[in-house]
Each structure stands twice: as structure tokens, then as C-alpha cells.
Image (cartoon, helix red, strand yellow):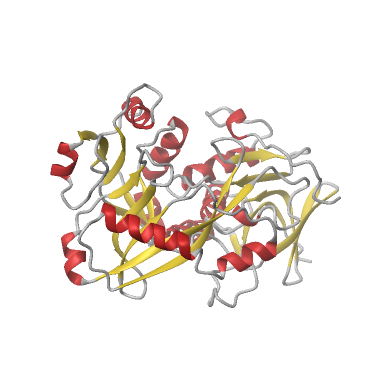
Length: 404
């Protein structure tokens, strides 16, 4: 057993967990961040995975939900400081375009995006139908669409590099970074013990569990949460030099079409570690399968996703970005976790020593730093002190206790 009694242990070295460790360690608290590194070979890896093993996530403030927009706005404002302090570059500022049907009522998607943007003082421009096509001639959307164009404070982030940056600063502030996999969390008298698959036991006064889609697949919480984990397929289209040059000023895109199957997100051509440029497209479908067990999650992450979804997304990408001449196309898998509400979970279990920060609902990458700050404040204080109501993030429990 490690004899150190940490003030805080954060379990999960992903976007939320690494951010929480940075914020918790900022004031000199003794913090450990525990989580495995990215597997060297995902196709044979038998342990846990994370969804940040990628180079592209859209970042922007414009959103139909004010809370998610505010979390993003606060996070983006700190990106450059995090990069400077860590020496790790992850923020690639660029343009963003949110597109949806011309609004007919105040509660329509595009009307809500406009209202939130105005409330938060976001600089954006609106283009409707013909003007949208004229402004973005390389893109095509269904007739009757309106686009909200955010020219700056947007673009994309590398989630891999973002996690590295947060963990680097946490280490600079004295946090221990432990590349192990936790299998059990248990409260013992006045502290919490954390047991890892590597055979070690770590102790802390408080433990924050930020383990994403694997939260319910491991025996990490005193009681299981209502949490839906969906299998998602993404497509990466490799582009040649001509297409990369033609689309060099392409904005990141979030598209909500009238067809429930037509929505998607698209990232502009970005370089990956192999030196190739890819357009990335993703988006859920109504029949995306739910994943329940550790074995199901592992098998999904070791797959290329669903072939039918990959074909659907590829066709959609060709329709929205016409005249592409791809070098190659391949699909990959990830997961998205949802609570019964539009928001993530941020709460503590009875006794206040074990907290949870999870379920980004597909919206957390851009907002992860502020989510980490929220989690740090939650763990530092006995009562809720964050300036958004705790009710938005309150834990909801499944019927069967995890230790039953």
C-alpha cells in the first residue's frame, strides 16, 4: 500500500479528469491523477479505453443550450494560458458554422442558438439560404437552411494534446500522475482506498471518479448511476493536397437537418500524427446500440464501428462537401455517455468523500476545463459553491446497488 494519504485522488486521465486534477492541485493540495496511458495497439488492447484518442473535436461557443455555451465560453478563454503553461499546443483557432432549418418559432433549434449567442455576447453572423451558399461555396445544405457563423473563439482542439497539457500543469503543481487502472474504490473509516489492477492501493481523503463510458462497467461507485453509453461510428476521409488546399479555410460544422438522420458534425482537414490530412464526420443515429458491460465496451473500441453507419456518414460527407476526391476512407469507433438530463453528472455520494464527474453528452471536449473547475470546487467544499445550480448536474441512481 502506498503510505501517502492524498487530499484528492482523481480517477480517469481523460478530458474532465485531467482538468479537475489541474484545478485541484492549483492551490497546493496533494493530488494524484490515476489513469492508464493510451494503448499502444488498440486492436489487441484488453483494458479500458477513452474517447480522447483523437486529434479533432469542434470547439465553439454557439450552442442551443445556454449552460453548455457558458461552459465552453469559460473554457475557451483559458486555452491559451493552458498551452503557454504546459508547452503543449492543442487549440487550433478557426471559424465555426452551425446550420439548421430556418426557425419558425422561438424554441426551434436555430432560434435558440441565436438567442444564446446574443445572451452571451458571442460575435456571430447569420446567413440564410442563398446567402449561406454564397458565403460558403464549398459546402451544401438543404434549402431553407440558416447558418450562424462564429469567426473566432472557435475551431478545433486536439483532445490528446489537451489531456497532455492539463496533466503537465497538474504535475508542475505537484500532482502525482499514476499510469494505472483502477478496479475498486471503497470507503474505509475516514478515507477512501483506491485499488488498481497493477496491485497497488492508494488512499485519499476524497476521490473524484471521472471515467467516462467505463464508469458503469467497473465497480467504482457506491451505487450505479442512470447512465446510457452509446456506440458511435466516425469516418475519417483522407484528402489529397488539392482538396486540402481548396478547403484550407473551411469552418468546423454542426448541421441539424430536418431529417432526424441528417444531422452531423464535420471537422475541416486537419493533420494527424501519421502526416495525413483527414476530414472527420460523425453524429449519432436513432438506432445506435447501447453498451452495458466492460466486455461490450472493449469489443466496440477494438472495432471499426458499424459498416452501415460508416457508409451513411461517407455519403453525407460527399453531399455536404461536394467534389471531394478522397485518397482513402476509413471508420473508427468511440462512445458517448448520456444522463437522463441534457447535462453531465457532477455530484457526491453520501458522506461527501466520493464524487463523480462524468457523461459529457457529446458536448464536453470543448468545455472540459470549466467542467474540471466545477468538479474541483465540488470536491473542495462541503456544499455546492459553483455559480450554476447543482440541480442541473445532480446524480440520478440506477435501481441496483453496485455492490449488490
